[in-house]
Image (cartoon, rainbow, N blue to C red):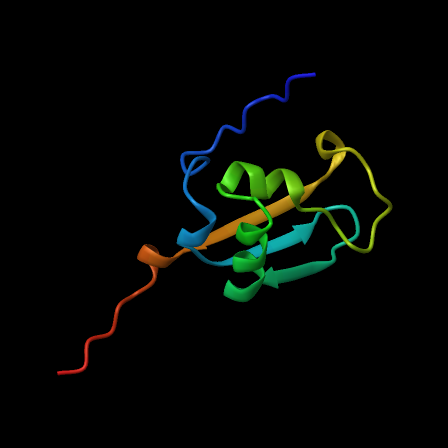
Length: 88
């Protein structure tokens, strides 16, 4: 069964370009932030782009459901979007 495409402008960006990822379950309200070490672990397990990562994420508090029935808010923070500080 073919999965529907994720309609997001950053869908094919690499996981290693993320600095963090905020995830909130819209059903129960549970939220967490995946930091760089969590994202590196995901990349080492074969999750290479943002689309693949979004399909793997689920709420740890809710019962397991198929990806199409998950109600999650996912907000990525990309490394190049962060402000750069230069000390002169």
